[in-house]
Image (cartoon, rainbow, N blue to C red; front, side):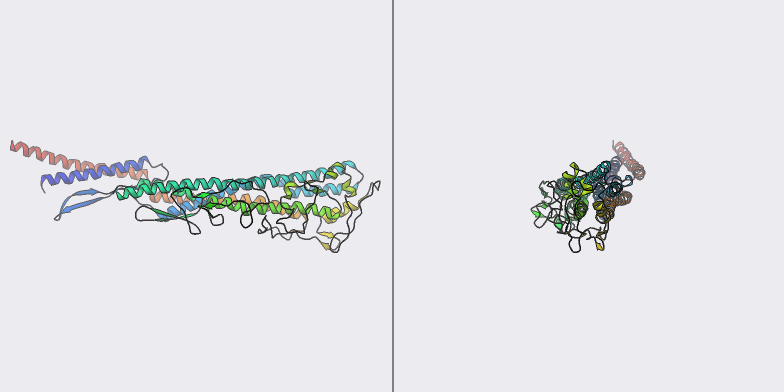
Length: 507
């Protein structure tokens, strides 16, 4: 080997080692940077006529387990969806009060029944009559509070659709811009590994909004496909949703007036899956409307069963009691829990809880006939109180006649939802089950979120071990590179000494 060739080989080795040390130093410096992966910079031996003439350095390359990376993003989207469900359902849980303290719907219905039982012992006592009205007021306040909580959560769910649509659009735009830069860098023969890391971070952020699949091309491009086969554009704004006030009777789809999530003009509300977008749509259109319907039915049947026995204790703002024999959708029962109040006549004259507000005509399969206590009637009139305690609060509408069940199907403002609350004949049993089911929804959401977070952390740790930067290992590699650099430097020094000796001999 000639002296020139030896020097050339040594210099090419020094250049490769210099770039490798720079790459290792960069990995160490960015070990804590989100999404940064370990890069490898390999050299390729060069030869001519079977004689080694040096090495050529390549470009930094990533070594990422894409399947594991996709699993981390999916788990992160599930965790984000669970966090949203937990946060919004916490509003409903808080509105239900504290069941253990007796201030939930079930407890307040029991308190109303207990006040009526106490009044039956002394119907002439005005203090006990006032206590019945106060218990009714407390129950009404709880219905109103829970309805307001459900309504607020549903409004927030709609607004979250807008927030997440904007976040998804921003992530898509960033992914598109980075893909364009990556293609240009690769086409010019330059490294694009750091840009690919940044794009993966944006893809993971997009996965928190909706579940996506990533198809990677050979030229650095990516195709993003949402579950259901929705192709996601990367060249500008994509998702949109119009603002709206979400009232109990509005719904999305069919003849509904509630706006949907649009993707470049196409309604994809029912197509998106996973992430916060799907969670918000599910809460707005399914979970919360079902809860509202369950609550409305509880309030409407409480009013209707009192009304059937001769006491119009609960009404809406217009003084009317909903007809519970009609289908829920489109009826006066929709939103009744938010409008229910104690009848103004009863609030002004508590004696009506003893005397009754109207006569009842017996009908087959319905309550028996009732005539209110006339003016100046007996102060110990207990007929109405017996009817209320035995039948309005009981399993029968009259002796031998079962109460009609509170519906579990045909719920929601569009009549398409189904409740798990079925086969419960008494007001207290239905209300107690309603509170248990609706407050447990938050706990179930929190449990799902916790599992998703744990899975995200587990998979993230594995991905970090597989593709992340191990500082200890990189420092050890740096020492090896420095040693190799020193060896090449000694070769250069030896070649330099040979040149000096040769020049000295010539002189």
